[in-house]
Image 1 (tube, one colour):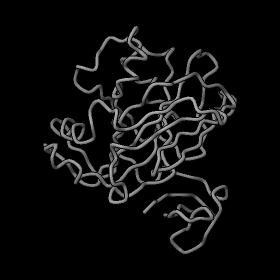
Image 2 (cartoon, rainbow, N blue to C red):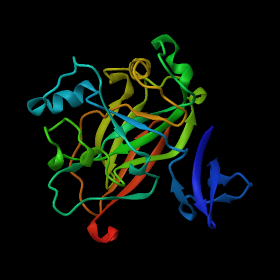
Image 3 (tube, helix red, strand yellow):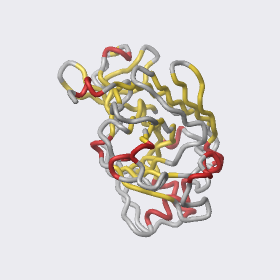
Image 4 (cartoon, one colour):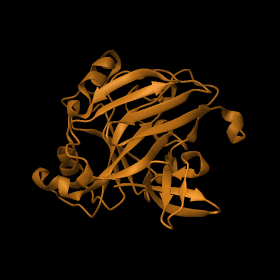
Length: 255
């Protein structure tokens, strides 16, 4: 099942996918543009992975201070960084290079601590699409993520759907792509992840307790390009969803 959370008529509603848009829990069917899309579940801790696709490592090779042979490069984001489908992401006026990152989001369904890799998929509730923006100008050491690069308000777009894990036969063979203003600029497949989902859950749960609603952003393939104010960025993962987002300037945020 594809689940969502939307705002409509002054209230927040649980919703499911409908051919005409979304169906609210009370049975009403609404077109997609009639609602405000929220992240499709109550977001807990967001754990993001950097450099988890070999082609992306190669793309950045000249400027990296880590390699694919190291432990997974993981960092935390707060729920406040997350916005929903059709949301707006701010691009500060002083930046020269801001790029998207299409990622498979893995949503944890129950408490997980010291999980063995062979048992890890039992702790996955489902999957969503994420677009995790980065501003390269602000990186302290090119690809050592820091707070104002990766925990910015509006920098992480999530949705539209939470797709039940049981409806995804193989999360490690999903095509993903990004389109900027309708032009495909990034393509990849989850089979090319360096550390797979089982490995990531086992690694993370070895030193922190994962809880229901926590999200693992599993990294992005190569093909990241600069985006500008006014651009529509769409990130897609086959079988999971199509996530749309618009880049806006400081004026939209009163800056």
